[in-house]
Amino acid sequence: MSNFPRFILGDNTDMPDAMFVVHLEYPRFVLNIETDEVEWLEEFDEEDTKELEAESENLIEEAFAFYEREIARIEEDNY
Image 1 (cartoon, rainbow, N blue to C red):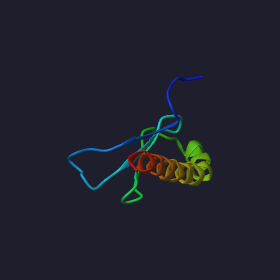
Image 2 (image 1 turned 30 degrees about the horizontal axis):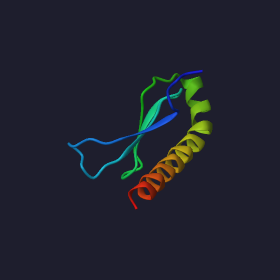
Image 3 (image 1 turned 90 degrees about the vertical axis):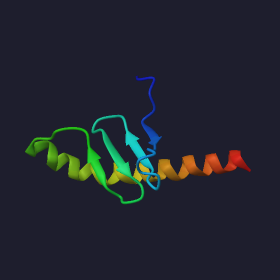
């Protein structure tokens, strides 16, 4: 078991309107919350692609849920 979280939030001053969720477990990816764009950090062969298609929708939904939870917690702490 890793000491790293499954998801983390990220931002970048070069893209001030964007917020990212990074998935640190296989298959690793970065999700741009503003555009819904996913950048996969793995290379997949044809067989992996079929499995990824089935799993990716759930992973992306989990990433959005993580984002919503984290933002709610941040807003709670700021009030």
